[in-house]
Length: 71
Ligand code: SF4
Image 1 (cartoon, protein in one colour):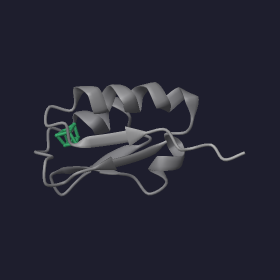
Image 2 (tube, protein in one colour; image 1 turned 90 degrees about the horizontal axis):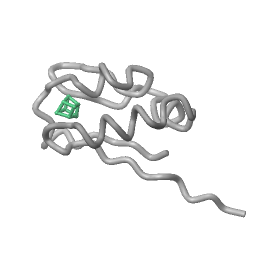
Image 3 (cartoon, rainbow, N blue to C red; image 1 turned 90 degrees about the vertical axis):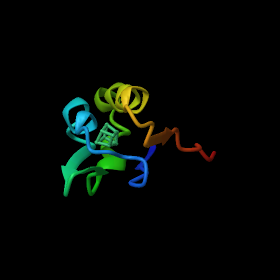
Image 4 (cartoon, protein in one colour; image 1 turned 180 degrees about the vertical axis):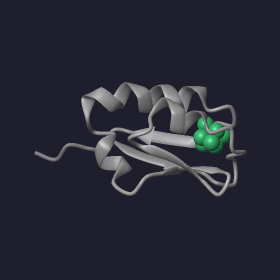
């Protein structure tokens, strides 16, 4: 899964880091994708938490999309 945070939209509620701590961290007052967080988002156990974090981000700063599977 591709996942990113638009810092210009984020206002630092930290909800993403609580919902999906394997993928998001809270640094310098902003939500960020952890180093290796995009890979963690491919884990089925974290995928739903990432989607929920994106849907519930109060500033709609999180983008996530499935990677294209090449044959
Ligand atoms: S949930 Fe949204 S607004 Fe809150 S820290 Fe994460 S990206 Fe920023």
